[in-house]
Length: 510
Ligand code: ADP
Ligand code: GLC
Image (cartoon, rainbow, N blue to C red; front, side, top):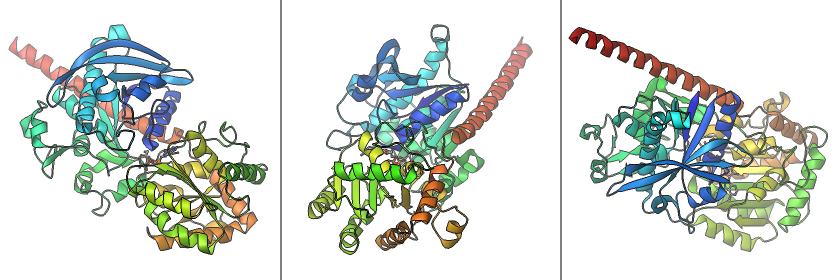
């Protein structure tokens, strides 16, 4: 089957977080199942620079709020990267320094709505363009898979152009949406009646997330637990009613781990490769020493905690900031933090690192290499997220035998089994789960983990359980494939019924 995977980021072209990992690994797993999955991304400067070959294959016009844009359709390929990527090239909107969503200082681009409404429209038109030029490109789309609000209007534009192509929408994070004013909505030439609560309208705006939920044929999110949580008022960000109304159209499919990228047995970034067997303890020890040396932390055997991620409220950074001084005062743990983000957390963490230079190493910025070395070299990985749709870092930590400490939420709850006397006895424990999303619970959890850290045999057992956990993308890919097949055959059947109906109408009128 031919799948067009529309996304605002994809490793190794451009990545800011887990969405970029998913857009790389899920298509790769689907290709292994025999599908031809192609990505479509905006032609950001970084993505253009990351491409090894670029070919212009066409162009067409799309409408923005105040003007139209003529885009160049580029086909990008990359050495060591299987799969083809279409880049929507509108330099005025996408060819800038910075990341997909913000400038180099972390300030969101002022025209983000226009950038992603135009991108959504371009994706919808691309499907028609490829169909029209099928002879030239020898490829047309069977199903479009859209991801997050930046592609939320793809199903809307498909519907507006009477394109019967089935679309799947995956919600990676309900906290981010693009919301248009009525004035902007009227510029898009969409049916006026869609400005209603049954369609796009959401508390006086047109929500790109809600639109996607309403107009796509199936909606998924990235873990079964998050799927349940967001149907409640507490965690639904106002969308819980819309989500509940989706009924069977909505489901949760757990993300996976790219077993090649995140593999302690063959990770090119780490000092010592290791597996869950005999090399486990010595391998981790060597990686820990290397990390302690690189970060100029004292070379002791005390537990080393790690954190990698976007420095935003969601990730529970405020809890980490709150407990660190007390933790450093009362225990011998050290910590390595890698992250960046808009807002005050960078400043807060910088002053903590200044106050505790022997205990806390902070790297503000993005570093693929350090992320891997933290996963391999730390004993514990902190992920006290307030909410977490799935979370990939805790799964990477499990695979590296770095036991995660997580809050009991979203995909964290689906993947981490708390250490209790029962779960230790039946060898299911692979980490530590907080009772509540607060600083006290995090503190207690770290202290429980420290106690177990002293019990070397139990600790090793937990590491081994963690490392052996099944987490490859193949399981998720199979579930997505089932959805694609179901939606595709539904679309084929309804097209057949439609053709039959219009043929019989023609016969009657003849
Ligand atoms: P989210 O998508 O919410 O940011 P995930 O846990 O799903 O969280 O995925 C985060 C991904 O981004 C992981 O691959 C992680 O290693 C990576 N990442 C986040 N921040 C950084 C950073 N500063 N440097 C390197 N990798 C990072
Ligand atoms: C989002 C979520 C994260 C998830 C990732 C990939 O960024 O915050 O929990 O793992 O998307 O689906």
